[in-house]
Length: 432
Ligand SMILES: [Zn+2]
Image (cartoon, protein in one colour):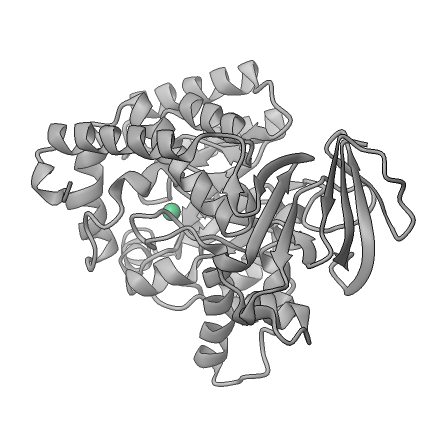
């Protein structure tokens, strides 16, 4: 065996806690039982720990840690057009590499073992994920604003990546047309063809703001979801971030096409985009996942916070404390996401990928131990996350990242930020 997690409380099959040891080999959970032999390269004494599946952050722009705090308290369109997009024009590959590493450290420290990303310079994103050892689905954001030449360039570039592939067990490529308001019908249809041809996922933003929703109704006489449905874009390979503005018909369309909806409550609230109808979507059988969105709009990448807010926001919206139980939301952040990705993770069980988080039981936030789902969704914070294993590799031990030198990363990240802000005429925004 590669690793044995000895004698912990295991959240088995996402259903109940049992005292057992976990044997891991070749990145896979081989055995979960009381009687595991003491032979492994690494044995972790986990008497005071609870083993749970790692969380999956299904929508983020990891390297946007570079822009944390630079432009807050604005509407989505103002924030994008006047602040973020101009600065992103000055991005260089090394900025993205260190921005992604800082994001990965933050995610791992809050129990995330896999994330679904959309950004630029994806060779750097891939390298960062492989270096630190976090599982990731990686895509570059495609925009064409109606220009067919730009659309063609995007598609060529995407196909180049799909042909090349990624030599990694933990990183996979997806396609990311940014949104229906930034991509032409031509680009969206071409993306769909490519996704079907190479059997990859499509990661996009749909119906995020009222502006987008109203614009589609005015210009096309249909909602963004109807528009995408009419062109044959929607399907079970679509990972749709937001879906805040939806009609009953939209929800029916999402369900009929088995679209996976990614709820981002913090970003939606902060940009005042609204509250998605997650409870109704869930009741209609739509697969719901959770995302943090980027650190420029959230402003952190902590999926634990997202779980709590997702639950209480829906209760508040529907004025009913009995809906969206802790267990439902826990599934959003684990097994539902795994299902959307087609990845055998999100659960501790023999044969599943060894993406495991050990919670520290000697922490006030899990005392007394009563309902594990309630503790995870409503009570814990990052201080409870002790150890993280991803694809059978020890990535964090005793609250310390062991795969890279954190201090080196922070130093390089700050150099990258300085360079980026200086070239964007925003040096005055930095307090260094
Ligand atoms: Zn986003």
